[in-house]
Image (tube, rainbow, N blue to C red; front, side, top):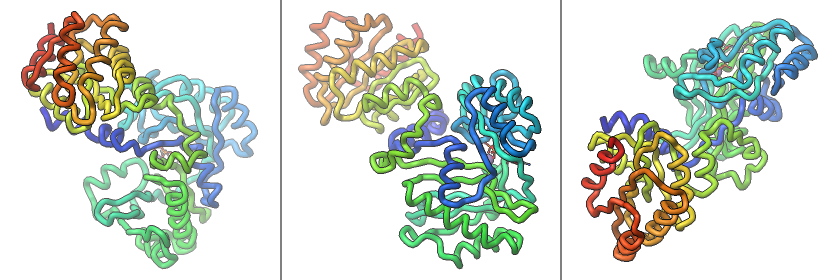
Length: 415
Ligand code: GDP
Ligand code: MN
């Protein structure tokens, strides 16, 4: 039970905790690749069915691919909430471009990476159709083991790379990259060789690997993934799909990239929380949690689970929360209609319990809180906090122990 919660929530919590993953759309990545001289199929975005028609009409060729622009992988095998199967389709007329665009834009695409709710598609990308003779996988990532960047490649690219990695790890080639010097010609050619590129394409493949690393380094990326990296019969090496991620800590010096952030692809409550410096992740349960510190937040979720409850979110208010940010946190928790109880679990170290109490009381009064509130406060300014709660006259269940508090939260959420 605990392990399943951790499995489900941890990757997202870790990513939110480190905040390292700005993603940009495929058509934006294609432009970035082209600006580094990396070959891609000619690609143009459209934001309405009419625009898709126009783009297709003026493309210069009628064999095109139309691709849903959502920030998630697995689009080819995804499904729209309207029933349309697949976020990638081959088309050959402007009418078809318009028809598909009309079915995609404004609908949600559900893929193995989006969760059941899917992600809204606000744009499509039209690309010239090129026929791969082979599909490879290539990515630049940071590697824990070598503590530096690596080039990860496979001859078995395409739509099932996760399965390949799981079932046949030997099909994945990992090449450490020198952080400053990048990939040498020899290294890059060796990878192209190992992957089995045709002789006439090896130079182009090697150059692509080198350029991908340049982008990775110049732009403070955390992920530069090309799948498929296609080899075509006419001797081209093309990046046919791109998933890029960028380090949020570098936002200050990558303003062009960060201007591309598309908040329509993020959960609204998470976007709102982010504005106030709150580390918030929405989950599916019914107990809203307000906690300080990522570790305590995880522990709180575990204890709730142990008591048979289900957390509605992960919320770490950090050490610098003020009564105002606490109130904001409450607003965000309460905007989720599925929340049946709120559990505040604060360990006051740097954080002052009385600030939390003040925020909680303020929020309860101003927001007209009607659902039960369970509070456990310990540490700095604890007596002051308890006094504030007592004198508030509000119906707040206050506890000293985590166990009893969690049990109460589960009980009142069910009642
Ligand atoms: P993903 O499913 O989100 O990774 O989307 P991709 O952009 O990778 O598209 C899925 C698959 O569609 C690719 O693996 C290709 O096999 C195929 N595909 C994409 N573009 C083209 C193209 O121009 N021509 C052909 N024949 N297939 C394409
Ligand atoms: Mn792909």
